[in-house]
Image (cartoon, rainbow, N blue to C red; front, side, top):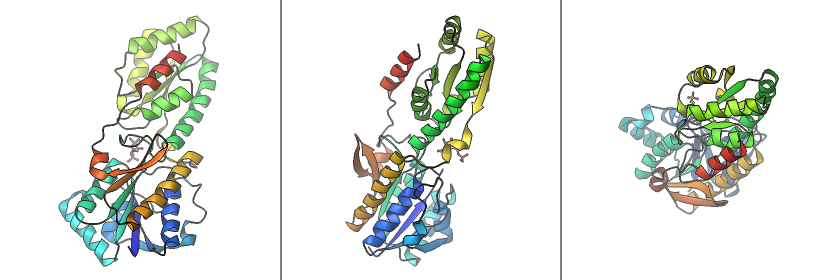
Amino acid sequence: MKIIGVLTSGGDAPGMNAAIRSVVRTSIYNQTRILGIKQGYNGLLNGEIEEMNLSSVADIIHRGGTMLRSARCDEFKTEEGLKKAINVIKIFGIDGLIVLGGDGTFKGANNLSDAGIPTICIPCTIDNDMGYTDYTIGFFTAVETVVDAISKIRDTSTSHGRANIVEVMGRECGDIALYSGLAGGAESIIVPEVEFDIDEVCRKIIQGRNRGKLHHIIALAEGIGNAYEVAKEIEEKTGAETRVTILGHIQRGGTPTAFDRIMASKMGNKAVELLLSNESGKALGIKCNELISMDLDKALNTKKEFDKNMYDIAKILSI
Ligand code: F6P
């Protein structure tokens, strides 16, 4: 393994930079050249590839985003695209690839691995929607951002005696809503994994109002549907003035938490070690606080379990 390539693909996640830094420095420490591939699989297809050195990754451990930039690439999903990518990999003499991203990114990496390119994946997505790992890099930073927003919205919610819906990202996964709802003391958490009963939400608003509660925060996962329709129904059923805040891409940026940086540093290091010991087709993850590596096929087929126990605790604490 003389030359390793690294790329970030799909939606960016805070902590990607810390992982890139770890990959680059571990490679150089092991006397292996490291090439940075720009803009994910797009840059791979277009040969946007540059040699990296120790200074390329100086001063980035604390920065959100990805210094390699990212993209979603439809061409790479085609057979032609895969062939082109393999060709570029050969032209640049890349012996192994480290790929950072979510499940779409992992699927592409799995195709490369099946085609004989040694590939290791690091889970980076704010959604925490990958079943084989307890956490993905970027998730806890996004949760911090949401908790901060909930605390601010709670102030104005109290001042006006309103119900406030905070819509968070996560695609079909409710983890951002669940974790930030629990940490932010939300009165209701609405996620795709649990059937939602608007009457229960309304009952809580009325009960809270009757005991003098002024604020009412509803953490709602984007996968549930239209937040404005939920707000309208709440207003009609309770008479409570209801506002919607869609947090959007603010959740994708910002300085990564220490936890995300540590996880990224460990996984970046491990990814290089695995390539150096001739491993391929592996996904790195964290299970019960231990770093794990799993076959990509298996990782991609592991169903994400929703933490119903945590959801129930949040419900109890918000009575
Ligand atoms: O997967 C990360 C994510 O931020 C999702 O939570 C969200 O649904 C989606 O990406 C937004 O995608 P884009 O940045 O392409 O608008």
